Image 1: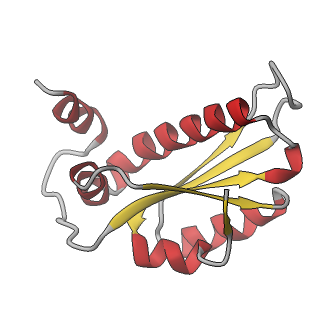
Image 2 (image 1 turned 60 degrees about the vertical axis):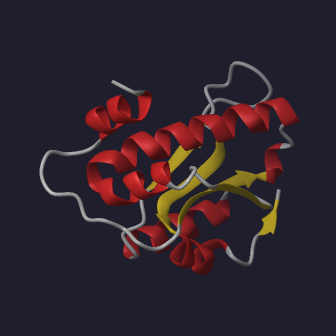
Length: 138
């Protein structure tokens, strides 16, 4: 069994899967107010990506399948402070977009509980562009 098959088996619900034909991606929104180093940002984006992928499997299996089949496109953008996360999560919830918020454990550079990265998706690119299109690339 390949890695993709194994991951699908542990993340997707049983039953029919809706096939998504539009382009899909995952957007990671980084909190710039924490002044994280490059390595810390990379680690937090990794946590967000994996968390979003695993969380979306049971609720959005068609989007996950389309994302895996199309190369797992990921975009990183930035916001000046974590207050933007609340707005983005509310809008994502209203549009049924899966999301995952990472809070730091506090072992290294920043205080425990700090909101570091918000991952949106995997979901249709067009919808994610409406949510995050005005944000600057990291």
